[in-house]
Picture 1 (cartoon, rainbow, N blue to C red):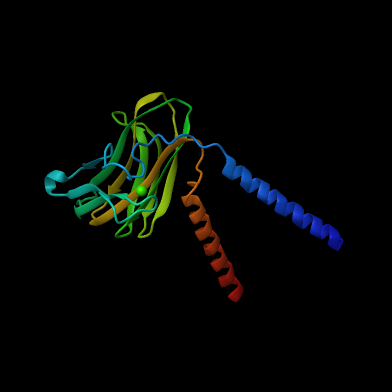
Picture 2: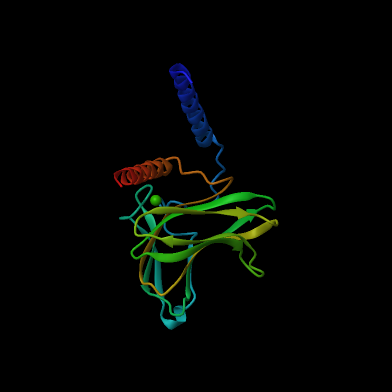
Length: 214
Ligand SMILES: [Ca+2]
């Protein structure tokens, strides 16, 4: 291959890369169905907290935190003053959503915790038989991170809920921000996604440097 052809191939690949990225970012976004998704203007409603072992003294408060945020200036805080025993659940809910069979959605949110802790994101029918349309086990870290799961509707359902299940005995604060439920595949938030990509790029760069040094 001549040098000129190598140059040509290089620029062609670069051009294809740019076109590909443009298509990703230009993809149509579905409307966010979550109410009070960013906790900027109102209190905590219509979010609700359910504590399985409240009778045994498990204490958790749900409030807006003006000191922590990943987007805007506020976030939602669950203050767990006393954790459950035997993995009793503390759950953050929003309901009901009216969804149709065949819809494929993305349920996404950002979270961070005072202490690293397991959690589960779930979208399901909010009464028996509690049909699950999508769920994911996650680990909430001490730094903000986005988590998401695909939600695939296998039935028409006007009693769909989304929630985060905390099932452990860990005390401490857990923050949430920028919840999304929308039709379509996962896409980064327009504002936060760029920060995400920057961090990812730096992480990969650091890895690459680490490998070169070996
Ligand atoms: Ca916010």
